[in-house]
Image (tube, rainbow, N blue to C red):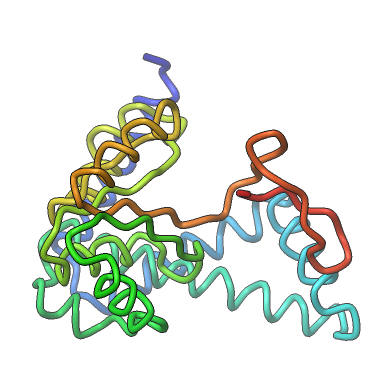
Length: 220
C-alpha cells in the first residue's frame, strides 16, 4: 500500500468525521470552499475545463467561460456535499427519493413492461450527481441492480468509501475487468445491469463519433 493512498484515505476519513458534526449548510459551504480552492490551485484541471468550454461555446467571451467553469465546480461541490450527507446517514431514503428528478424514467418502465420476466441492460449518461442514479434506481426497483464502474486509483478509498456508497441500497458493483460475462449472467437471471457512459473507450471495444467537430472514442 502506497503512503499516498494512506494519506488520502486519512484525509477523507477526517473530512467525513467533521461533516458528521457540522450543520448541513456548513457542509455545503465547506465543500464549495475546498472545491474552489482546487480550481485555483490545480492549473492543469482549470485549463482543461476552460478549453472544453471553449470548444463547446466558442462564441462566448473568456470571462463568460470562466464564470461557467466556476459554476460547474460549485455544482460538483454541492453533489459531493449531498453524497457525504448520505454516507454519514444524515439523509433518509425518502429524502433521497424526494430530492431526485429523473428524466426518461418512463422509458425504463416501458422497457420493463416489454421485457416481462427477462433481464434488462440499462444505459444512461454520466452527468449531474452520477452516484445518485443507481441509488435512486435501487430504491425503486423490485429486482437486483448491478452497475459497471471503474476502480478508483486508491484501493483504500475504493473498498472503504466508494464501494460502500455505491452498494448502500443493495446495488452490486462490477468493475470493468471481466464484467461482460457477469453482465450476461445477471441478464439471463432476469435481473438488471446498468452503465453510466462517460469513459474513453477506443476501438476495437469502442467506436469514434463526431462530438463538437472532433473525433471522440466512446462505447459502441
